[in-house]
Length: 330
Image (cartoon, rainbow, N blue to C red; front, side, top):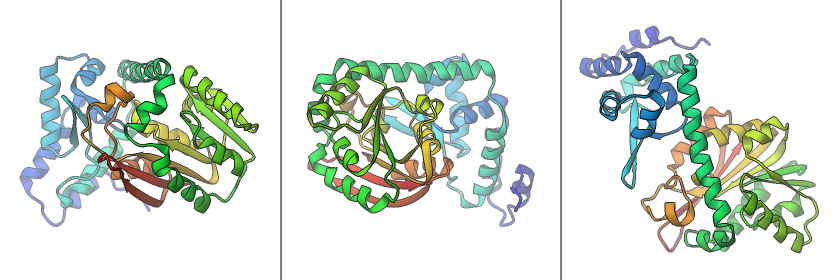
């Protein structure tokens, strides 16, 4: 089966959708800079000022281009506090234009991002990551206290363990990314031959290792680094856990893609995270970079990474936060 081209997608609008909508979409795609913006927004979301840094243009000019893309239905926005983040719109609101939109995105994805743009984009992602690591190194001793303000492991841990027992078939190696104080490590240690605790914040990893030693857990390897480093090292696993990690990460879609690459055949990725919310205080108090995620976002990122959605569970906390437990398999 061949993939429809952009030209074929235009020709296939047999139901004759609104000409003005087609014109708006084509206008959105009708500028090289806007096409580059869509390329940058391929996976992750960025604010206007960040995009200005990437493209080295004035805010007024960037806002103009983003408005055109939004009017075309090619980007969507999400407000987090005073910042508006832009991302690709995964599904055009006009059903009849979705084929054209998706064909455009496929063409953009096949294009190469300019080296200078890629370098500046990488710097923004690195700055985000460095800020997150610095926060956790400063607040390692208060991590559990801060995390409990949102959701305590006691509130949802049994549900995560239930997912683990129902999902995992091979019990060779498990990797937990960002294990915190290691509340889940004991459960993984008792079920797997080998467990790797992976964290990019040294202070957090040291705290976690101390607690594991006190509990007599002997089959855990503590590794300083992130999922990109794990991929470079050739690590693989039958189970990967991302427990309240993605909302601290500057590029959550990339983390999911990395995890897919680390999984053995039929491996399982377990994600526990917050649903989208408006509690801005968590950024300063808990080091959150994102105010949770819509379930559809995680599904879309996992699908792009080649993962298949499995079971899901949603838990509402007394403080109003909602937790999503998600299972994805390779």
